[in-house]
Image 1 (cartoon, rainbow, N blue to C red):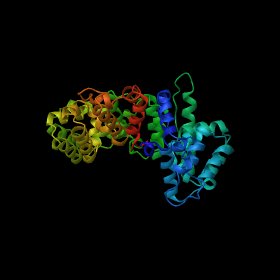
Image 2: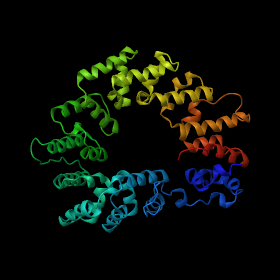
Image 3: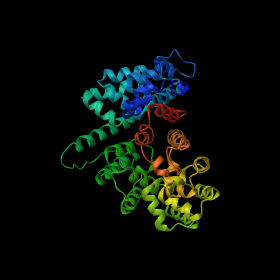
Image 4: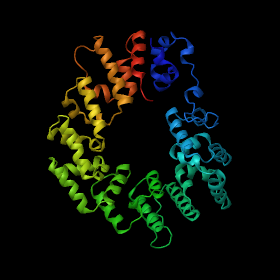
Length: 424
């Protein structure tokens, strides 16, 4: 009865949860091999009518080692743009010494590369750099670290940023810290950006974050006095410069005036938050300060409307500030399922607000369905396990704890329940 659920999933299950291989091997072998023989091409046929395209999901999976989900996302973008020749882009990269893993990493970080014109956009850049003496190893190292630089259209900007990135990479290879200088037209946006990125480097911001800011359009790295003021504020808060939180905090502080920040803090105070609470939340999740006053009000009112008290709502937001950025629909849907379908009390959500950040399709529903099946069979006693016990652990831990310890027939049944409608 479970063949329709498990069709084509055998290898997927064992790839995702290799530790289960020994436990479920005999159960899966009970099904004819034809149940699991759907080919990658069958599962990944284009949905837009371009079945004749040689650039398919299966090609990305087999050639670049992508997951099916990532391959589908990238291929949809390529087809929707309807331009460029992905095959020619990949061939060009290979001809310049890029390895398969390097190409996979580059395309994952910058899918837009596949819709660039290999002959008019990418090729000339590579040829220009080689004419200046750039080796294949240099090109592969720099573009593997900062693939989006290939999307810069202006030749002069591309050259300046490439040289800057190369200089930083070389300097960071030294066992001693090397202080760098830069040269660009004084007062230009480019000059500001290079100076600011170097200032962040001196604070300890790692390469990955530095280069991301370098090629971004964030205003926080193009200012001068305001940039310096914003950096000082974030540093004074004690946020670690080596983390993404530092960059997020810098973006948040930079784009808001002191008056705007004060107005938002006052909104939180009106719902029972102390000023100290707001800044403690900021350190956990800097992006929450960017939310509009209306968004803040709507988020709190959604929680109140679901039956949480003001104190409980404030407590959940303090523990999990990301909650304020979720849609009312998502919060309501998860609360209804966990409380009405699973019978956990509202208090359980108050004590474990990160649950609102979990995916319904990937985590909450599959695991809860397994728990309900075990409860119906009397295998968990009469009490519902705690919410963190069911939802906070990894998939491997959950399956080991709740599935594989049972007999093979029940393992098969529970795996079918776990997999059904689950988004990979």
